[in-house]
Amino acid sequence: MTETASAVTSLMAAIADVGTDPRRGGYSRPVWSPAEKDLRGWFLQEAHSRGLDTEEDRNGILWAWWDLPAGRRVTSLEASRQGALVTGSHLDSVPGGGAYDGPLGVASALAAVDVLQAREAAGALDRRRPLAVAVFPEEEGSRFGVACLGSRLLAGTIPVERALGLRDAAGITFAEAARAEGLDPAHIGPDPAALARIGQFVELHVEQGRGLNTDEHLSAGAPAIAVGSTILGHGRWRISFHGQGNHAGTTLMSDRCDPMVAAAETVIDVRRLARVQPEARATVGRVEPVPGGTNVIASRLDLWLDVRHPEDEVTAALVEDIWRHAQQAALSEGCTAELTEESLSGTVHFDPQLAASLTEAVRRTAPAAPLLPTGAGHDAGVLAAKVPTGMIYVRNPSGVSHAPEEHVEDGDAVLGVHALADALEDLL
Image (cartoon, rainbow, N blue to C red; front, top):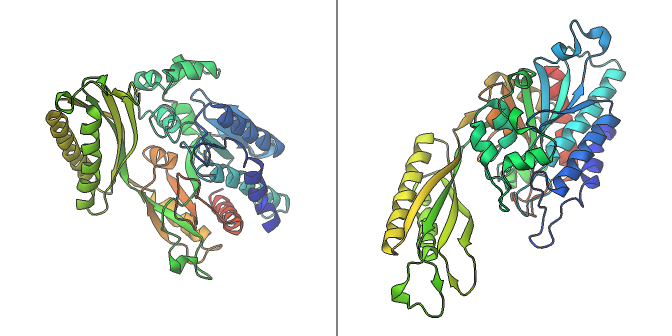
């Protein structure tokens, strides 16, 4: 079965040139960009080559079904898909992201189907329900600003009106972009029928921190695989500073109302305030001055804030503290400020029964596989409020993610496929 599982390396190699970013390094694959659409086409082609039945639902989620044989169905095809076992991930990326965040989960799911189909052909697998591989759009939120937008729409955890009105950097709304891709904005939103098809969801993902890349874990015999336990509560906020645009050469320093200065003070405060809270993470990764000229004092500056902590109350308190300091920074510079919440997810505890099943299966491949918390958000975390979900992580020896240095060794990727296939077989 190792030869079958190793298909994951050829699958990843086949898309290694899609969406490379010569300016940032790494990959830039925002949702419905040419690169991301190429990957969606690649997925559909690979699914068809495995005899899977594919579809795109009204929220742009791709599904590839390995149905039960007709003789094994006690109901219609559509009814037999209720409560199915689902795996998969996403294909979009952050700007200048790594090769594995998202695509590894999709490629591993396809390779796991190879393993399971081989086992069934050999008479070693007796399936009782269908399996689907799902690809969720806009997981990173790099185009429209809300992470896990596809799964949020499916689960009904974001107001439809808000989602349709989201705009990308070019001013295109999500509704307009969806219509351009053949989706009807009138039908976008909560989809109870599609959600009912997910009996359990298992997502394999590259590990995005240092949980599996310590010296101990990199030593011989250390686990390359882990099972997810929790996801830190996290959110994104936009702080907009409004000042007075003016000429950089003719405006005296004493006459300025510069939102850039207020924002700079806030960025320093974000780091200082977050370091006071154990386990807190607070980041400013994006700022946009308006109008953005080198010889122009900005009239407005938008700053995006990402805050995470295991306790949701601490996350809220930290954001409030940062906001208070931002207002003070704005006032001292003669500016005003406003705060907008763009997304917020509470701490997720994965289904304990599913986690136990995954752990038992994964440890047949990686005997010392630990339970691992993460600070990264995932579609599995969004769906956890509606259906039992779980995660499997594959070691990232660099400890770096959302950057070109993100990495997975081929051997570890193959182990991940074995672990995923075993876990899916137990659940099937």
